[in-house]
Image (cartoon, rainbow, N blue to C red; front, top):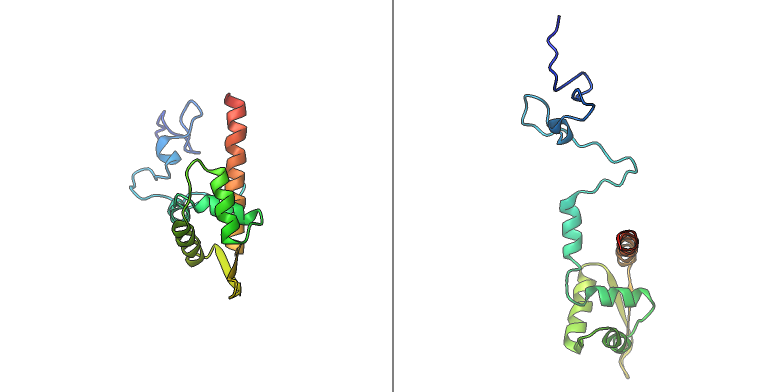
Length: 152
């Protein structure tokens, strides 16, 4: 007769019906190897390293203000600076706004076009990647707001 330990059964659960900590962490008994984590039920499994690298690209002080106002339809730098400075406690300078727009363009979130040279008119707009990141952050914001209502 096979010896049965109280801390495990065939399904990897202990006698109390709880999953064994090693199984929960993806460790095979007697092995230091990690098992491939199973995908979440809704298919929303995320790689934290990839997510971290994506979030690092929008970590600048004014990035979200610029992206969200572009998403709302503000296109000209002069309008952007006016709207952002009305919303914020601090003021964004022209230099910082232009640096932010250029960096977001380099990251693939924003496009721009010079419409005319005299007077100089430049328009900025979100690329699909920028729209997706704003959509994801809006869902995260809604989740935080919902959580605050539940706990508050």
